[in-house]
Length: 310
Image (cartoon, rainbow, N blue to C red; front, side, top):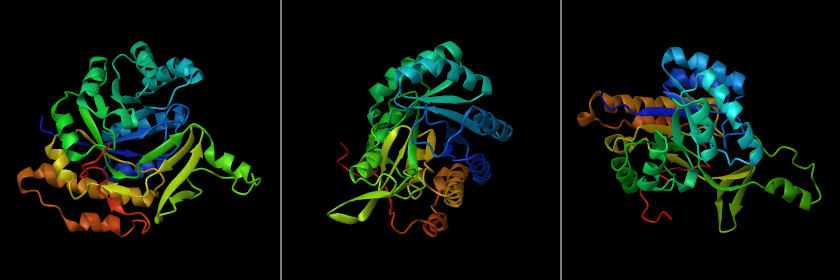
């Protein structure tokens, strides 16, 4: 079977999921905050079932996010939750904690497992370690450069997933830092909303033109990157390397923005697959994104072409 990379997206709602399927997404990562972290939106088990009902007839896969930091309470409820996901028909579990692996072995032994531990998935030895324990996909850290991505892909039998577009997380704390700050100011009611839709940000004194979005949810405080990764122009390098899944991170973006991004990446992937040897990048794919890109957020290559990574 010919190589065909997956175009993976996120969705904040059933409405967005439907529109991104129409735009060309092959798969989605969705879930609920109790078990998944930094999700574009909340999908309870009933909504996950609805998503699967919409996606399956179109050949689109649904992955459940269970990549949160698991406390004892969450770990104890995993068995029931994983059994519910398996019954619903999800295609894979995205996990970082071995507790999820243990629950899957009992309640979903045939389920595909995608190992995602955020910034610690940095080498192919770790990929192969989790492969021996049942993982089928390895989600690479966003801080790896292109050379490391290529080397990892060539050195593991696991499918490799790489983020190609959108913002990334640069700091996380289980503490409610924003709320604590407001209480310290003795004005707890000044900003009652601290979530993704509020538009809060932090910035450095020496680089005030760079704004880092910050929000809180059930899992604590998240500070996100000041720019958006955009590998559209160089997507062919990742496809040449055999990267199996190309992820568009849609958190804190509008449906219209994510539709445009998915459509542009779909066009690039399809053009490459039609004739890899004759593939040429088309500027209109990037121009479509540029027209709706937040002017305060630069499109960048992230760490892909940087020498210093860690």
